[in-house]
Image (tube, rainbow over all chains, first blue to last red; front, side):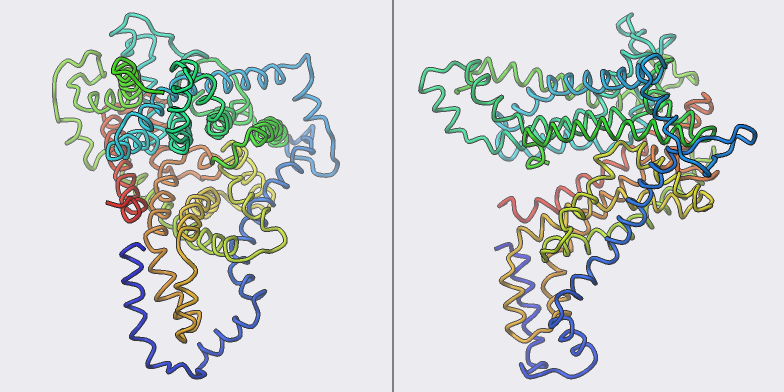
Length: 310
Length: 264
């Protein structure tokens, strides 16, 4: 038992004499007994606040957004026309000869590239933290990964802007090469931003992996590469899938990083952002398209056991 | 598998490289805030503290900071209340729609931020609610609920229900049990969740863009100045300070959530 729990019990004891163990009187006690007899009401008192918020404010907003995506614009005023519904926005988004389907595919490609880069970078670091460092140092390792995660998103984006700047950026001045502002730079920044989200689940997954399994593999003559390939990686699939939910989904919805280092790259997020004040229904349809992509990804990740590793 | 010294060394080197990648960009901004070149020339031309003294009380960031702190504070209070209540409901009761609620709590961070942003934006637009303080707080609280919820429900799962039953057996009514047993056990988890929620809100910029009015939060102020290339020396100082400040909660939270159970 944690020492804190011991204090709690001590603190509770002095109350007992005043209640005397008999039936209490007073409005507080009556209310307490009332709730005790009506578990449904007790549940309702816990649930009504968060339930109302999530269902009315959040789910309601999502439904309104989907509804908005079915409207068009009035030809004369340019305002949202709510008198009739149409699938025209979706036809535009998914039209094979329009620009938007290509942008969706490009965004998926960027998100996939970011995910792969993060897996490759996260594996050695996570392995080092979970299996090489001693228990005491492991906590420092985890904090070392956590701290950049909580450091301001916008500052990290700005930092990469100063690194990548094709004119006088740090990369150009130090290494004499720089990818500049564009898709490559964007992938680098996104991979950088979401890397901790990949490292932490893999560390947790490795900590759950018993050392005896690794020893058994060695005893049976498995060399390190074979053990990694046949034992470690297959058992890490759920953890990697869990991390990839973040790297993929966050990359898919980003548009600020695109603005900072993406140059002329146009992705789902930038289309939504540029349409929000001029054509809200179309922006909503584009956002709905990203829900479809993320939904499909989440379904796949769930099959791989990602949800037990979040 | 037994790791040879060479394998360990290789892993250590690779890990070191990844850590350099993680911290390097942040260090560059810190260095730039001390760079004597006003244009941020690289390599730095010399060491100076004049941008730090100049930025103090200068450049409009103080108003943005005040606004960000206020938004984060109110959003955290809302998220703390809703997240704690939700974790109790989900942990203590079995009810129809329980999975829906736990799914809805996670959804705002599982879906891309831009979806949450535009969903709230279309709702406010439809209901003719003008964008401002209230709408930002609604947006931030919505995605902050999950961090409070996760922290509190993790603590509930670890704590034993026996002491609550013991409290009831000894004659305490549910309110007394909550005040003297349940709440003290949850206090640090709630504080940890609240600090993370505060940090999340303070830092957020995607949902904020779609739900804020004319007054800027601090991240919006930084973004705006970066895009316009204005007062970059002040931006470097503010950015460095923000990073240093946002790291503090991580340390505190680590202590709060791990300190008691780590066995040391």
